[in-house]
Length: 123
Image (cartoon, rainbow, N blue to C red):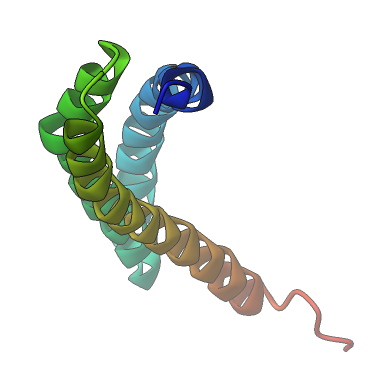
């Protein structure tokens, strides 16, 4: 209880800063990719990525960041800390699942692009 702050808050704060900039870049590049692939069957990858980025960002901004802010104010009541962490942990798992969807969509995009280009064919 006494050391949760040092074990949790600085790391989450650093991750939040990093992911804020990365998410902005992902939005921009995802829209550019969707425009570039719009008339091809490959358009679904950026659409899936964009929807999952929007969902993860919405979850983060509406629910997780307020919990992070509360934890950064040094919760001193063990019951409240337990409550906050019990709410934060499963929501963070959902967010990681959304991130996994993003990366899976991109992996499949590049795999199908490589197949379409004939990469790996020994002709």
